Image 1 (cartoon, one colour):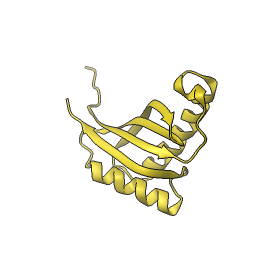
Image 2: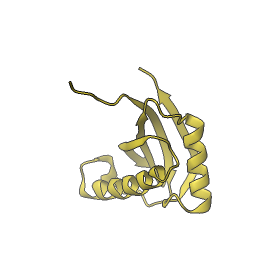
Image 3: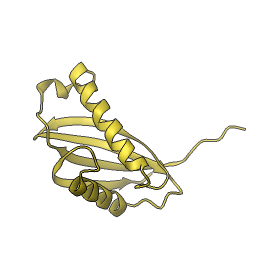
Image 4: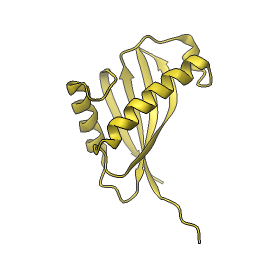
Length: 115
């Protein structure tokens, strides 16, 4: 019998203090891949550090101009007690203490995606 995890998805947008490059429009460009890898590794490490219960991964879906605006999806197990507010508060705390590993500017937008 095969089993699979049921995940909750949170559509997220943050602005990272970084220089935007036109090549970021193409997520497959080498510059985009480097930015995404750094953002993903840093952010996933932060979330795994017991900030988000049952955190699984993030997936970057778009990079756009304005410093660098990062659209991404946060995946947590369905039985996690993670909420939109848990994520926002963790990002605000991590940004203010420097533990997030990237510098966020502007608004943090999170919404739970329901099936």
